[in-house]
Length: 168
Image (cartoon, rainbow, N blue to C red):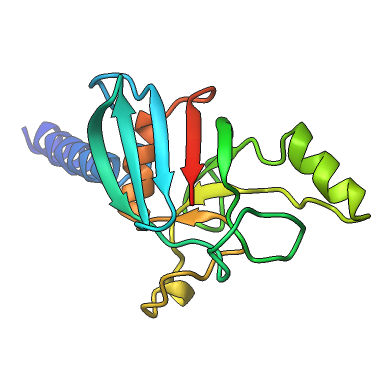
């Protein structure tokens, strides 16, 4: 009876550990209505996850340090404006988790090329690392930032291919 009791205790401790580690995972599941569109209002500093026009979730966002105007070139500190789509995800992002936005599109590339410049790229919706939690609102290189726990939910809810509109 002593050995079986030890196995039981070890089994219970292992089950408890696995259960707690599953709760702390950054990878959440979502079983609600499909997110059919993402809307970001730069002037409101808000992002809306929508299902056929109905707002499912709203988030406060941080943007690039020069939030006014459409992103034109690499290094301009602006967040793009226009219609794009979610095209990739990075589970190992240095910004906790991130989902990619399809910037630059053909028009963005042509506009930058006409000026002999690069349009930039790697625009993501992502979390906020500790070193950027100092209260500054617009600190990204043109991305859209939310709290780490919020990107966990967004990462679960928003699928690749989802349209995103970013407005001034």
